[in-house]
Image (cartoon, rainbow, N blue to C red; front, top):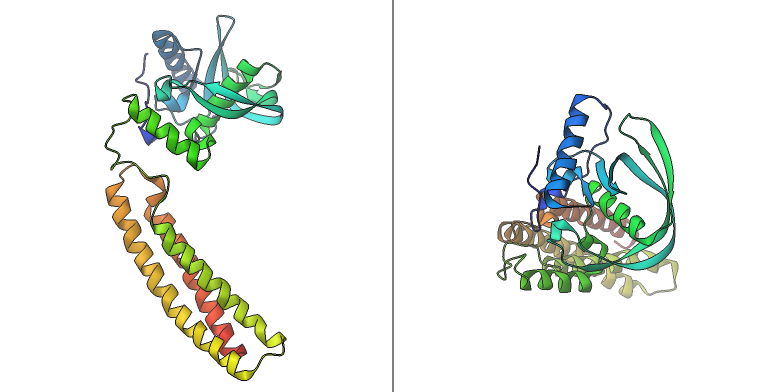
Length: 272
């Protein structure tokens, strides 16, 4: 049965697909749906995740035959090259990424038997890598550096693939990173202060650093609380922002607060 295809910026494909354990009726139905959808849209390759099935399955059309690759893994890769690729997810907008020409792969065939294969063709190798990416929460945009990603997003917007109004989508740089950057610098100098007694430094200087540590500790707490609330503001503003998830933000905050507590305790016993 033909299934609707996921298009950018639909981020429902941004999950890690699960391995296939059974190759019975459900698997065969899923495989049929992938092939029917490929035929309907005249596609040469398609991953299950692109039509809403969160399983490690993809199909590549090879010499008019639709070949299924379940639980695919790349074992070795050689001969890097720049590959200019188009994906149905981006409505065939070309994006240049780094790929490898030579691959050694393992996968399970439609009968559940493990197979090995070597690929030494640029087009076939890039197609295989692109489809594997989708199964492991990666798209072409994720292969770009921040500057290239920003340019690609602007180009997609200009082609009407993504609305010009980007308030709903995650920015490539978040202002909340300023909170993290300042906090990390404060923590760095707190750590350095603990090493000062190893050198011939006056008591007055050590007392000054101890005062700094107390000030830095309070500053870290304030910065991290501010970071959390600003991150929550972004999470509401940018609805497609995966980096704005509350779990990520709490992790960033707790890591630095705990570090500041440990350093402050160390400062009390070493400098205080």
